[in-house]
Amino acid sequence: MSEETHSARPGAKSALALLLCINLFNYIDRQVLAAVEPEIRKTFFLPGESQCRAMTGWLATAFLLSYMLLAPVFGFLADRISRWHIICFGVVIWSMASAGSGLAATFAILLITRLFVGVGEAAYGPAAPTVISDLFPLQIRGRVMSLFYMAIPVGSALGYVLGGKVNAMYGWRWAFYLVMPPGLLLGALCLFMKDPRHGAAKTAEKKPHIGKAEYMRLLKTPSYVLNTLAMTAMTFAIGGMAFWAPGYIYEYRHQPGLDHINLVFGMITVVAGLIATLMGGVVGDWLTKRFPGAYFLASGVGMFLAFPFTIAFLYVPFPYAWGMLFLAIFCLFFNTGPSNTALANVTSPSVRAAAFALNIFVIHAAGDAISPPLIGWISGHYNMNIAFFVVAGMMLVASALWFIGVKHLQRDTEAISREEADLDAAA
Image 1 (cartoon, rainbow, N blue to C red):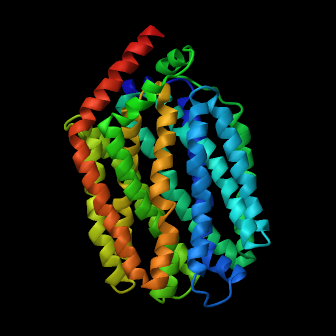
Image 2 (tube, rainbow, N blue to C red):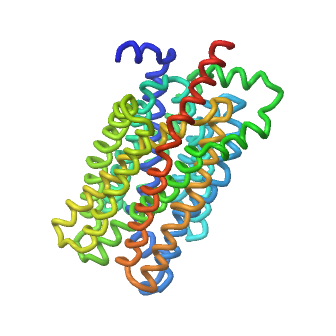
Image 3 (cartoon, rainbow, N blue to C red):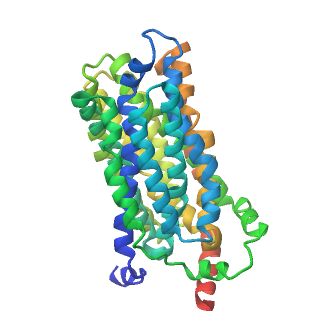
């Protein structure tokens, strides 16, 4: 273990710590919106408007629309200029836009501010995991990626908890104001970081340009394609559940106290998600030494088990339903480290940022960009249980795609590993 750790590049730990903090505030900002959605609805819509849930669902989609459309642009830039400068730009933009969400006087202005939050995250999203991939070796990359992505459940939980508490004390607008100061500080710290390029990336920088063949290679890599499709189905499910679960529990299951629901939901998310994310990376790294395609196998099993627990959550009475929700969230987050590690392992360092950017575009365009308004529409025309059945069905789709990808993963990973070794030696 120590030998592997020492093979990490200089400054790796401080870079990981900074990126982890940034990712934490990233997901706090995302889920603050879900935590205060009922209050936003009361502010901008009349009681009983049939399409009000579908409209507030578009607040999540607006953010994702700019995020997924601009991620390929920033991914292209991140393969050519300092990734830390791009990350700094992204963090500052989304922090200021979040504060702007609190200032919004109309629903249209609020929608615009969420678009700008997406612009900031589009700059950060492709660059951050690429920096981590360049800093840490293949042998421990799964564990490191899990540490980075543990900010998803922790940040999401803090978003629900802080959003609910701040809303109860000062109103929903202050929940957005308070995100800006730490975001600006973290963005400024990025300017002091050096951009360590992998040998392969350095070699690519010396080329006149990265040709079309390098990008087309992504689409011809089965592990990359299947992983992206599986992550799309997973993102659809997680996005829909994350946005609507508090409102579903409060309004459809008639549990008292929205701030209390956000607190409990947040605690479940942070505990279940944190343990699952860390365990997924450790189990994936451990199994990879013994079983080819282990990252996909771990992801597929976790997502398959999430299905029955999600269905049980809809029908088991409270407080026992909280236990079913805990297990469902645990299984959903178990794949986070393995799936993102596999994504890095099967993409060439010369186009890795672009590969993550393309992945971001696809998983959000067909995933959580459409699930919140779609679930809102289904609930308005039928009921929330039917809407959550759609969510659960996408978990089975994701699981099946990862199981299919198991047979391709080892071959695709070894091809990139040889390429990195050759280019490092040449550099």
